[in-house]
Every structure is written in structure tokens, then in C-alpha cells.
Image (cartoon, rainbow, N blue to C red; front, top):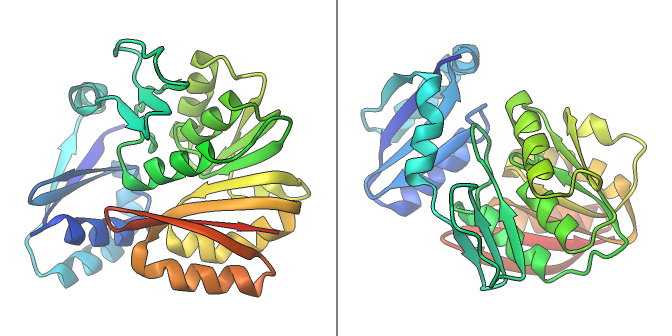
Length: 274
């Protein structure tokens, strides 16, 4: 299956972040930021399903955008040429199998990103990882919603989580997550699940991690609240800094107690507790 690269000229990083947040409502699978442009990648068949809506958004940007077909065979080479190890506060390193091991870090996660989102490079994954590192997981059962590569579930498992469901709606993400949990030696404690929020119906968790986007978080937060055990926490990102207020208000309306926020490069994470 071929992929499509959408190139959007952007004057600065903030405009790239805004475009990325808007495109996250569509089935784009990864983004690459450069100094004066944003590259967004989507499967050719998935773009066909939403092309009119994407084009309508692009017209609002006022710049000329370009679609380019990318042969699937070139995707991994593209990732390998751009994917460098990511260090989070000196406590965790996220690297690919072709990078040298980092025994100096307390938590080391090996990720082959392939088609899936979640390498630590984007500010939201970094924020979520930093938030996870501040929590205690030993003996707890949790959920990584919109798991992508499975990186957040893997970090939680390496910090002692007893069991983590890693749920993603995309088949590529499900397969990639399965590979990554095996490589990291946590397949006995991380369970990849293919589906949307309905996959957690009737399940209850001591923590929920959700790095998705603002609209999905707002739509599904009530389901997260129901799935949380008393005293459990919900850590979310995929939120622009200016969207924190609406996320905060939604959490309060569901009886969740806001606890902490972090910001990085215009993006934010938000932690609340039941």
C-alpha cells in the first residue's frame, strides 16, 4: 500500500503545530516538522476517504500545499535516516534497534516506528513519557489509549505495571505495538488491542494514558472516567497549550480532580484523578 506525503509550507513552528493539530482529526499516521514546512503522511486509501475535507482545511491555510506519492518500500528508510534517540529528562531513552544501547539510562525503550506514531520526538510523546516517569506503577493495571508504537505502555510496564492494555484503531499500529512489546520483553504484561474506545467496555484501570488529540479526548473522556478505579489517574496529551482550559473544564464536569500540567513547544499534558 502506497503512502501520500502532504507538504504544507509553514512560516514557523507554531503554524506547523496548529496544522498538525487540525490534521490529527484525519487518519494521518505521522508528521515530520522542518524549519519552514510540515510533512504529514497518510495511507493512499485513507486519504481518498477524506480528501475533500482535508482539501477544505488546506484552503484555509492560504498557502500552496503539495501531495506526493511515496512507495511503501521507502518508508522504513525514511524513518531510519531521521530517527535519532530521544532522551527524556536523563531518566529514559527511546531508541531504535539500530542505535547503540544506553545502559546509563534507568529506562531504555527500543522502538521500530514503521508506520506508527510514538517515537518520543514529538512534544506530546515526550510530555507523556515525562509524566509517566513521575508516577508509581508497581502492581497497577492500566490502559494506553491510542497506543501507536506502544511506547507509553512499554515505559509503564518497565516501571513495574502489572498489566497494560494498548489500544489503537489502526492495524499498522496494532502490529507495530505487538512487535515492540516483544522486543522490549514485556509481552507478558502489555496486551495490544485493535479497536476504539469501545474495546475497553466493562474494563477498569488504575491508570489511563491517552495521547490522541483534543477532539477525541473530549469525546471519549467520559468513557475513561467510567473505566478509572477510585483514586486512579488519567494522563492526557495531544493537546495544544491553548486547549488546556477546555480539557480542564471537561475533567471537572466528570468529577475528575485536576492535578498537574506540563508544556513543551506549544503542546501540553494534563493529569487528573478520580
